[in-house]
Length: 262
Ligand SMILES: C[S@@+](CC[C@H](N)C(=O)[O-])C[C@H]1O[C@@H](n2cnc3c(N)ncnc32)[C@H](O)[C@@H]1O
Image (cartoon, rainbow, N blue to C red; front, side):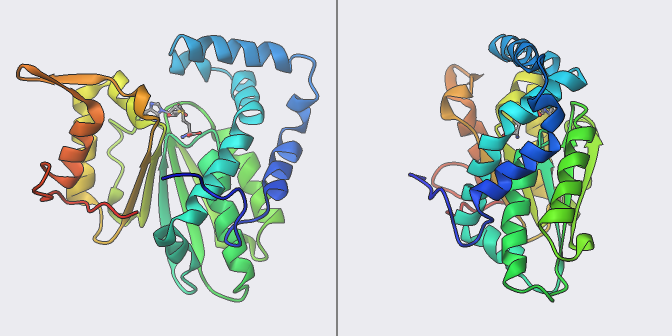
């Protein structure tokens, strides 16, 4: 997809999203040690040691205050540009359930919250609820709770309409029941899963084909260059080829469980 608009009538204003981080992470943004924590995270990310990058609360706060705000703006822009997601969040009467895999740092949470909250402003007395479940292998519980409390207090009229629950677990082994979700996101997480455990990642994607409910949405975003290659027989394929084959089917046959919609 080429350039997404920075602002949208279907999302809160960028300054409202940034305010959430300024308020929630005031203590770390004002800390003399912030640069030191940022450098530690940078070093671990440079070495692709993702588990080490997020293994302590100060590093997680540093990441959430340094990197998450820009990503939250990008995701608000992305979600509000996808008409199936806007239709899902706009629906006035039902509860919608969303799973954010690897979303513990809060970017998808705030991006989605910003779109839901804006759409709710257009229809404030509607009964719709958004229930967000986040599964992440790193312990982002405090970050998620802080941002969720802010969004509930500041962005929606009725606090019970926007909910988020965090589970610290490995998505590849925790047997999450995916059948209840209307939307599942894997944003910049799939290549990490492949790097960690290739076979289990294939199995997880296959379980999304077998167990997700009809008409549910699956959003995967990744920088193309971050995927490695996989050897099948004598040939080497980019991992995104494998993902497409599992989800959509063999090229030209389109006989998989998922259909591409843009
Ligand atoms: C590169 S970060 C992307 C964060 C976020 N989705 C974004 O785009 O801003 C990848 C995330 O996936 C999480 N993660 C990695 N392996 C995981 C696993 N096996 N199960 C659940 N989460 C995992 C990491 O802890 C990290 O939060």
